[in-house]
Amino acid sequence: MSLTLLCQIFLPIIGLAGPLLILLGLPGTWLLLSLVGLAEWITEPRLFGTPVLVTAVALAVAGEVWEALSSSIRARNAGAGRRGSIGALAGGIGGALLGTMLIPIPVVGTLIGGGLGAFALSSGLERSGGKSADSAFRIGRAAATGHMIGLAGKLVAGLVVYVMLVTALYV
Image 1 (tube, rainbow, N blue to C red):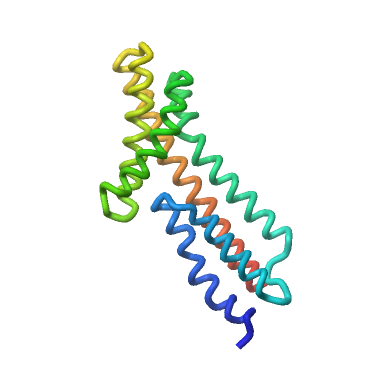
Image 2 (image 1 turned 135 degrees about the horizontal axis):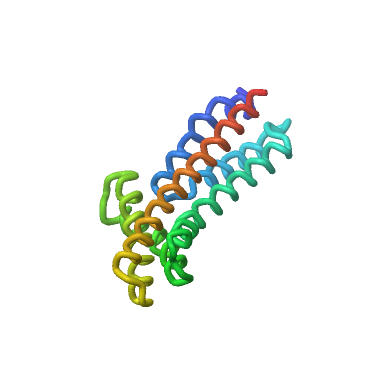
């Protein structure tokens, strides 16, 4: 059996883990792209064209940027200053990591931790900066919502990359 055929059989199966790992807060799209890079390196003729690979990397970067900025932008739109915006970003990342460790239910701990982290740090920093409790709560709620929207956007980007690469594998 040729390496190309093996890659066409196993890459879609193993690669599906990429988008699923995004829900755990792991770099699933980048792991998928690493797997594709390995397959591209070991096979001859090449499985994917340069435009497909460049587009996949661009979508992966867009998903990362979307995830990173969503909570900050939502907090800023709710009235957060610089402190609250940075708190939304840092709290979402730290909370997702902490939630994954403290709540050992796959996906659930990451989602709850990330949302709570974005909420807590952005609202706490805004409150300590002089905003009213009501305003800080509104900013925190927007940051938590933005964190969830960011994760959903990154998941969509990961799924699009997966479908695009699997489609290109057989065309």
